[in-house]
Length: 362
Ligand code: IPM
Ligand code: MG
Image (cartoon, rainbow, N blue to C red):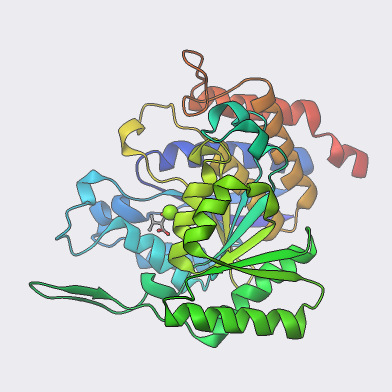
């Protein structure tokens, strides 16, 4: 198959991790006979420096025409002045919104390496396999903002339609898994959460009677996520709760550097990015963990291009690289860290060794 993939390296370690993921995609393309075309564009702080805008129209136009978008990370201290008119993060929020990517899938399935790297007790991590579906284009992130000399406000709004579509997406996903959805809100305090709960209950009753739905308040969810993570299958929640809970959930996997994400809308084009940020403290040193972005590339193949076998190949190769002890500094035991290039090379090597599926299939 042929596919146009727009690559948005962004800031900090973004270019290092997207370079790694593109190398892996190229190898998979070659091995399985696909023609992937990559075009790089600006986003975030890099785009502000070059054009004055965090999401230049050339980037958005290219993304709209592409089959999929692979993104590194945005942000950094040089653009963090609270008084700045434009911020790198606006680029990310704007592209999510413009492409209508309302469902952000963040799977968490700890590799055995997590048993050592995670601050959570190993017996709690065994068998954890959950996915957070975070609403991505609504809520407090996108509501009106005001600022005066002595006060500020951020409006949180959700419509019935916005809740329905993301709950549906979560339920459809749950059908391919263990059939359980946990909807997270703060219905004891927030009106948007009361609407969320009502709509989630109705959608499941009317359209997904086979799904087991439970509701959880976000504060207790934050606790249960660490105390009994194995109990969760699909967790669906609004934008900001999802942002916070997924950083927390990353600790189950041992590191932010291992978690991929897919942002999907109604169309085919999706945006794929690691859940970690631009890590300016280690940028340019060649030591960033590329696995989360490589795993995001696997999600790209699965969700935007329908290449399930190829996606599974990448996931297997990352698993094997981790098994083989190729651990970057964020997950390594003291003194034995692999750098970005070594981790990428390990994945490429494991692809060679294990991904013969295409030949068998063809
Ligand atoms: C994420 C990030 C972004 C978010 C930031 C960089 C705007 O934290 O993707 O989780 O809050 O959505
Ligand atoms: Mg976040």
